[in-house]
Amino acid sequence: MLKEFKEFITGGNVVEFAVAVIMAGAIGAVVMGFVNNIIMPIVGHFAGGSDFSQLKIILDEATVDATGKAVAENAIMWGSWVNTIVNLIIVGFVMFMIVKAYNKAKKPAADAPPAGPSDNDLLMEIRDALKK
Image (tube, rainbow, N blue to C red; front, side, top):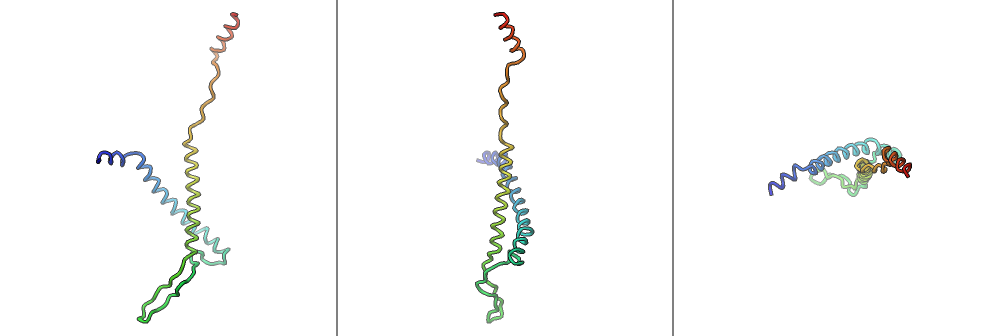
């Protein structure tokens, strides 16, 4: 079993998978930065000038209890959730484009059209025709 595990770990598929996971994490971070720092401020501007990621429905206000301890507010952060959905759509599109380009590059080249007769074949046909 140890030998099989060693073959599995040293195989090309595991290395390719590891690279794919690392690249996906990097792409995810880039897209998250793009959405949070570029796209959502534009959306927020057109949604009334607010920070879209801070939009929420407050269920319970932040208060101070009888002992003097602060009680945090309880809120549904729907603006942050919308940011996550936009991230998902953009990451999905980027991954789609990467897979599409990979499949296009991986596609085998079209077979060359069958070659016609060589010059020697044509000359032999002419010679045989002249003999008749």
